Length: 372
Image (cartoon, rainbow, N blue to C red; front, side, top):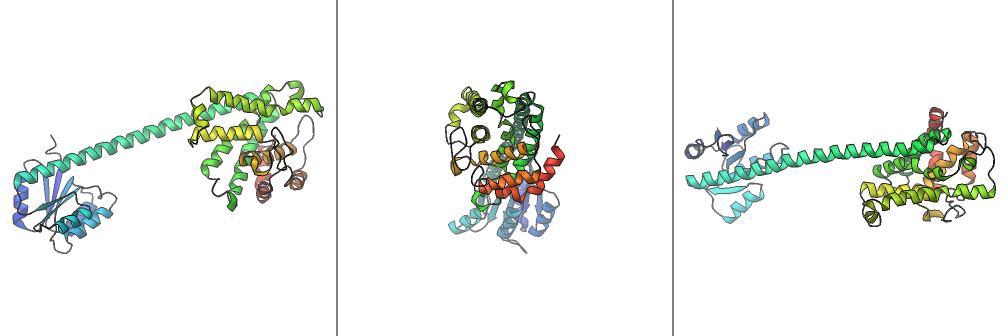
């Protein structure tokens, strides 16, 4: 039964109306009566929240429509159903009441059983709405919880994969850590460029930072003789080294093809996993492309190269130049910056170079904090 646990608030200054309504409703509901709309609103503001309000239109100080307007403006009161009471019986009056947010419109004189039935109906409807609202809140919390859990699993899995690459070469571990930091700083600066305001948002930045560690995943397929060679590679060895981009790309592609993402990835969908793997494959495959088209593996040029890969290209080279490798000593930051500036429009996207120059102090901070 709905009765007895619900409170009905009557706002009416006519004694006879209060008497009739109270007699009908008190055997079934908790009833509170206010002869002033101002006083009723004050009590509601203090925390009193009825399950239904019966509101007379003709009230002193504030009329029923004004009271209803104030209720509708309140965050905690707009969902209280209000039934309008009036002696008027015109379509325009009823339309005005319903448009103002009332759930029902009852004309005087009252018919006891009809009032009781209509009140019960509105209470049932409110209970249903509250139940659905509670279920929706629960579902939203569960979805958020599952999302956080899946995100944690995903992040840890990505770290495991990149750690496997790092075990081949200790320098790679630090390279990945610094690259993430450079990637975020650079992409945030690039977002200030009007050309990219429609593309770069927080979700895009997060995808790039998470995908960044995968850029050299294909190096697991390169032999130690080449990967760790303490000297300049021969042309044949360099050709073999270049294969790491396609090894990495095909590895991710095969993993996607073996999952439910296969069809979604080729669609126009924009879910988080789909967008992440699209960018991951862009970065892995194209971060050695050159802006002038002289890079590999596809000889892409300018904006044919995905933006994520153009950013990764600069990050990758800056970090490689400024740190020791088995085949070369570390360059100074100044020398590396000079080289990158010279390669603007050739190896690197000029917009990305400009963004780096604007954030060079941040790059220096990252370098000093995260270097070996």
